[in-house]
Length: 426
Ligand code: LLP
Image (cartoon, rainbow, N blue to C red; front, top):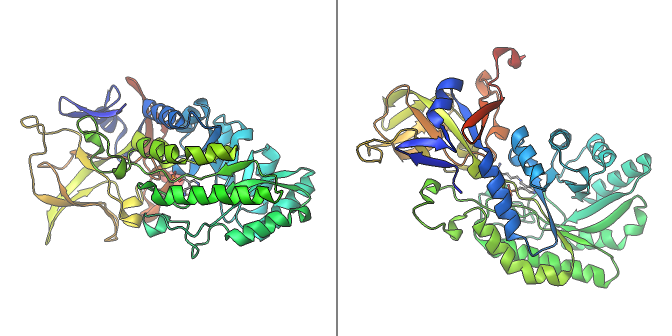
């Protein structure tokens, strides 16, 4: 199952030596495994096999064309958050009838494009938005299928920047507001309110809050239908967490669901919810992002300099513009050398070092207090589990060129996104 493995003390992606890609394509470089994306889709779908459902991959996690094509080919739908994501999803082959549209600030032209493409449904987040969807649909002479996003007031146990289910966040609407819109649905002649939606946050690794939110949603759905709402579907969002820590040791230690192992946590959450969901007799929609692609990608950087102030620093050629997660969420990515010490199979130098990028910000720290081997200028390091919210959050900050992106398929690899050039800076 693991597509990134150490073989003879060297890091491989499927049947390609990662060092070969780094020396051919340069650094920083994102490297993805096609088999891993395929396996994670299969794993996720397997966890849901007993449930009538539609999984819509959250394109915001990674919009790389070959990854999207792989996920579409696995039969999943897509959840988009912008016109750009709609464009890429359709180009990758997702059936529009399996595309959902989420987001608190959809523009009129984006709503028009989505309705024009014939997407499955929009997750509507406010009464104002429902009015706009209704008027755009009227102009197009169509009827928009809508799910209303509830903010269940349940905080997900995750980083506050990615918790969306608390009443003080901008997301969704309170229960009473949603019920009010459902009761007044006759006002919206070009909208069909088909269900309710909730997404309480991302990187959720303990099922409690997720299952509580989903159960509350099911009960709400039942109550609305008891008063004749005629709803047909529930969208329980995404948020399934993955194991960031020590995931390369998977082969050695059993996956720990509490640590958020992709698929395992998902399966556990779904298994708990299954009786409620099946009893509701509805189609369940889900919007997994991270759990399908996080483990499928790494970011490889090159060591530029070693230095010591009060601490030891390893300065690499990837920074917060290439991978923002450590700076923005203090998130922890395992950092490993591409070559282990052949004598021991373990990193040789046990002195702790901070791995930092070249940008003029103290926040430009990729990993603090890491155990690394005795590195030299020119050595390579890999940040693992970088397939989700990595390249999509990259920028040209400091007018740096965004990294190349490569997909591995067996013993071959392909650069699907070339490294930016100076011309790309405008
Ligand atoms: N559905 C909605 C409405 C969302 O807003 C999101 C993610 C998802 C589904 C997918 O959630 P996932 O299964 O990936 O947890 N940049 C942050 C994560 C932001 C998540 C935004 N919304 C990070 O790097 O951790």
